[in-house]
Length: 160
Image (cartoon, rainbow, N blue to C red; front, side, top):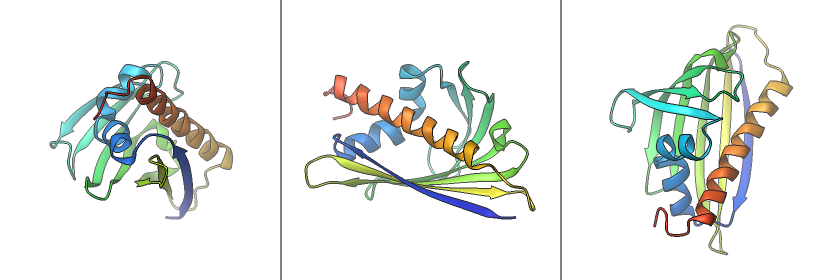
């Protein structure tokens, strides 16, 4: 199995704690509400939302994929970090064993934050994944992030 790692940073005007609550802790509820074309629903199969929880994420009609199984690997509310893995589903495109994501929301001096994300694509055997597919995934992630940010800007009392 090979691994391809990508790092990404997105700057936001939203305070780190508020962004973590919305984008990470309440994403199962918030994202289907504000972006149903991207994510139709999130269902917990086992667990309580903490480490080891298995969720099925059903994508919206605007997606090329149907659904994935998502496993929570780490949640640290104090350090604003979250890790999860996509362990099943058509988004793995028969070439990936899994995709692991590590997210950290870091406060900035101006009261905003930086969302730091590391994606690790674990390929099956010698399988290759195209840069274009990874770029598409990153663009969708940025789109979801920006939608959450816009929601928080439009609803300043949410997640206080």
